[in-house]
Length: 138
Image (cartoon, rainbow, N blue to C red; front, top):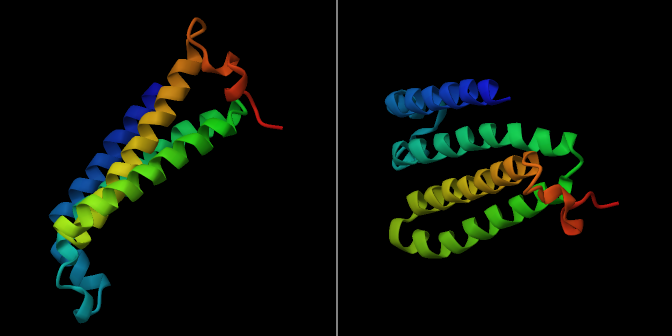
């Protein structure tokens, strides 16, 4: 799984870089004139968020395979809560860019929790999968 994960991180990172380098072209091609004004500032943050979500899907699928869907729900809840709190902080300071930053940071917390649950679940001495609250909900 780690080699697949590394390839996905590399490809996602290249995608973010490509979107950043071509942001003006992308905005001109995909958006109407009225929406183009602030869009290039958002491209990096939004592309980064999608890259993080694509990487997090590796851990989501693994946790589904281990029937640990409660951990996915918990991770998603913490990511959403992080996004909500940061939105209240960043939107007044940075406007729409602040909203995009809050989304990216929420996705990062989501990924960190998913990966933490996955890797701790793989360690036999620290297995979260043995703790009753983290067992499969039925």
